[in-house]
Amino acid sequence: PASRVINFGPGPSALPQSVLEKATQGLLNFNETGIGIAEISHRSKEFVAFLSNIESLIRTQLDVPSTHSILFTQGGGTGQFSAVVLNLLARHRLLYPELTADERVMDYILTGSWSEKAFQEAGRLGGARVNVALDARKYSKDGVSFDNVPPHGEYAFSPAPAFIYYCENETVDGVQFSADPSAQTSFPFARLPRERSGLLPLVGDHSSSFMSRPIPHLGEHAVIFAGAQKNLGPAGLTVLIVRHDCLVDVDAAAKLGAAPVPLSLSYKTLADSKSLYNTPSMLPIYITGLVLERMQELGGLTYFEALNKKKAEKVYAAIRSGEERGVFQGKVQDGSGSWMNVVFNVLGDGAESRFLTGAEEAGMKGLKGHRSVGGIRVSLYNAITESDTDKLVGYMKNFVSEAG
Ligand code: PMP
Image 1: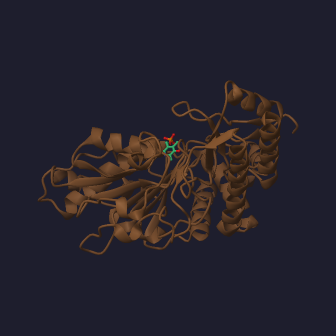
Image 2: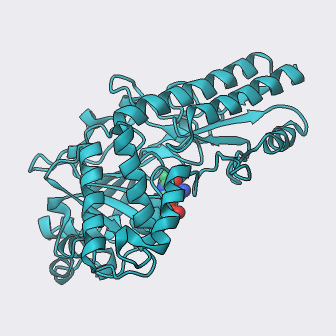
Image 3: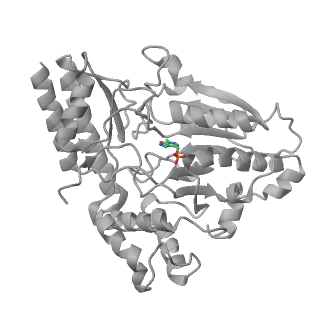
């Protein structure tokens, strides 16, 4: 409908119109059951089949190996900041019961405000020491901002951490690990300390890049988590990919002195119940399923990786032309720019609000940067089309020529 604008918001964010139209049907009558999706039992055979199909759609498109379970829960990325610590410290306790709290270490890689939040939560929960394996602010242009992914040589991991934590795409700061494995701003997999078993205790927050492109070394991760509300669906669904050795008996770990884990946060509880330990978020799951079916039809992650790369390149090119004229200023260092959240400043008194007002008048919303950092943020999740991007780029070019 004409009343819908282009929504460049960071999350919740745009969803494909065709999916929303189909979802309104499902609200009234889910898969010919005669009952709407918000009304039907989560234990009905129709819903259970739908959920299991979502799992296969993710498994196929992301190429998730059989060593990993795909789990569905609630609580968002923030819930997982806590759940990761509780589950993986329980696992570590079962593996190494003899260690003291000071000898047990969690390594955090800080590349932006979301990894920093997760790091703070780990400190709150305690039970182990928190080590900063890298703080990207040290390598920033101004010494205080998150504006880069540092080169591989700068990481300082503990010799045997209980886990290593990173955030793949920093939604607020617009910083992302490179998709090119040979780049110095790609994730430093080769440098990570392995466990005696050869496994990596690696945890990735993929909230704002999940299902936008393939995940390098996915099979080597212990845990990957993502809230659905960027590329996948509405807020209220959180997707987990958990390696089987991380589905641990948290009560057995508690007997050895680990912190007790609420059952709703326990990975093993979720896995044993096929993500139906308690009532899941039915409507977000339904819409996510429709998004995944559409993704599959369009060609899966091969299609979306190429599309998302192209969209981001167009916006970064428009920022560079604006920089040459002194109108825009990119905020992120070369090689670290996110494909999903592109951030820049509009230079000059009142220019930023003129940019935002003009964009709204042209039918484009959600471009205001996060309140903690200001500036402009363009979120280019999967539902943003190339023609949506072209419209924004056209607007940026006009803005530059009118200002210059
Ligand atoms: N991690 C990242 C990278 C995010 O972008 C967000 C939300 N914007 C979160 C975690 C927190 O997610 P939630 O709001 O679902 O708790």
